[in-house]
Image (cartoon, rainbow, N blue to C red; front, side, top):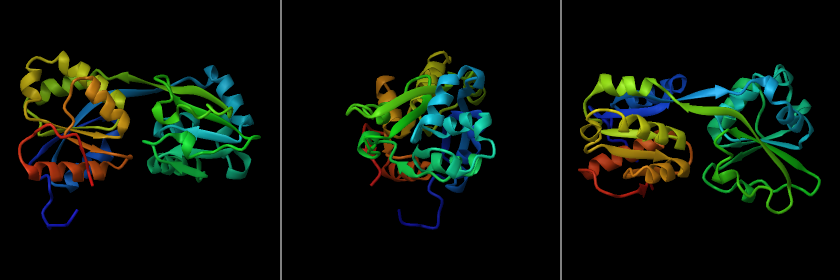
Length: 267
């Protein structure tokens, strides 16, 4: 997108639906674009107790590959005793869904991913296991997601285990009640954020006026599918996991004028 020298979201109220401890970076990005970030803590991430994950930990130790579905999966295994002070040569090879997950793996464990996979494409087409290789997929209790399905469909030795859960946060209703005026746009970065936001809004008095003329921006196929299932119009959609690209998409959409059904991907 061409740089006009003027932040593209000046004065726009941009709702950010994430876990409370994951809001900071996204809010700063909105400020950089000239917008007004509105924190909407829609979800809470709960790591499953290490003591309940014996099978998952054993599978990781014996696998050739470990596939991490998200930043939250990285943060979950960072609590495991066997990964404290772990060196890359002592661990399996890691495949991560998206560069953000890769950075978290580096920052949390000091391990560089051996493969960075596109989160909106089937992992089976990106990570081809040799006949003697095995993989352990770590994901949320909601399931491994469409990108991770069919990884073992061709006889590959693949096991999948949940290591964290996503719950709807009570703070969303409080934030909506406190804010109480229409948003110019609301951003979604996961299917869980969409579902919890839709639930929170449905319980909110005056929710119709709150979302009137509000653009819906979705990052990743899972978010878009969840938004469509919740009956939301998707105005901006970007593949991958770049929040800056999502904001660039909003800039382009606002320049077009009033909201209309579009479901367009940013070029």
